[in-house]
Image 1: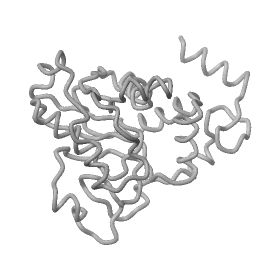
Image 2 (image 1 turned 120 degrees about the vertical axis):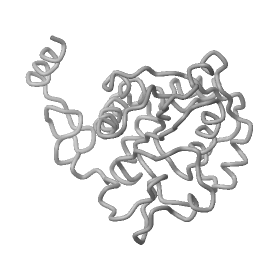
Image 3 (image 1 turned 45 degrees about the vertical axis):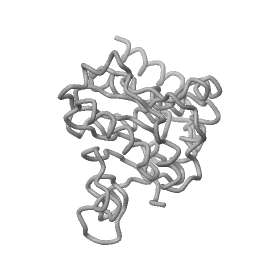
Length: 235
């Protein structure tokens, strides 16, 4: 019933596209959606971290030298224009309509991959969450989980505030993350033998994904996949 009412409302009151501003039936018009920088446009990608590769190799050099605890990354887009604009509007301008659309884009992609037992959003320290007003990974996780009929489990928590990861090298990010996260005690039994999808907005150096997936595996998870909207070029 709600779906019919929503479609009827959109027909009666068209809305501007979040990217081009043209009035249409959806938050992003079909032309702008086609312009989004899809990762599958790259001929070769690392089978684990999804970084675009210059040649036909199964894994990138980093994943070969230091295999991550996660099994694979499910990431539909490259972090470039115009997707980076939507993510910036969502995270730093508090444009929740952009966040809602980004969640739908991620859901479309995740419907095609192996279904986990539950999804776990990347945690945010309470101070940063208070400053921003929300955890963007949680706001992505709940619509995706709802669309796939999966539970959201906040099995991870950030115990140290630390500095922002933005602009740091891989080595700096790894040092910044050391001892920053822990398993939420009450959810530890739920992790035993579980297939977990770890949800974030952007994967940059994989430092956060590596740290958290290792924690989950050590806590008993059988498999961890990383679901994210976008992948940046390697650093």
